[in-house]
Image (cartoon, rainbow, N blue to C red; front, side, top):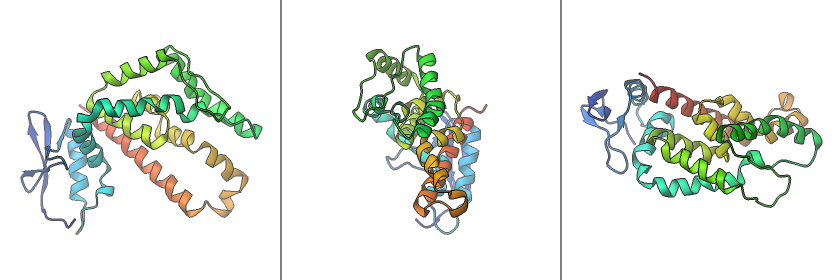
Length: 236
């Protein structure tokens, strides 16, 4: 849409800091007030809106988009939780290759670290497989992850949902919410097989395929935005 405002501000309200355009509070698609829980997040969102040129481009305002998702989708928490829980049985880090042995070793090194993290954090084993068929994790694992998700506030819940869908791994997404894994480490987990193949095909010399390069850039941007949102939502 065309930029229609001249001034962006954050106004203190009971719920936090309302993002306003020319003195009028921004409305989400579901007609809810766009209110940030901390001043630090509000200030960053104000900067996103202020940086727009003639056209307002939502994809250049990742923090605003995460906050809007948190405000509008909170009504569907149970359904979203059900969907996230499905990833526990199909998690990226639980399905390892048999060959080549170099790839299998890399998966054991990189993915195995987060399988171990899950075991220790939730005090229940997370199984891995080298078979194609889907497996079922222990019911106790499902129960403990469900209870963890239920206890999350709306903002952490939203980040977990976004990251799980983005990465295909609820395990690394849980670690992200616990600030146990960096965006760079998440990227290496998600792109492990792709990066392994890139070494074989000498991408350092020839470069990646345009679509793969674009996909990597988008993933890195979304992970960086999620990390920034987590930092700002926790700011004093």
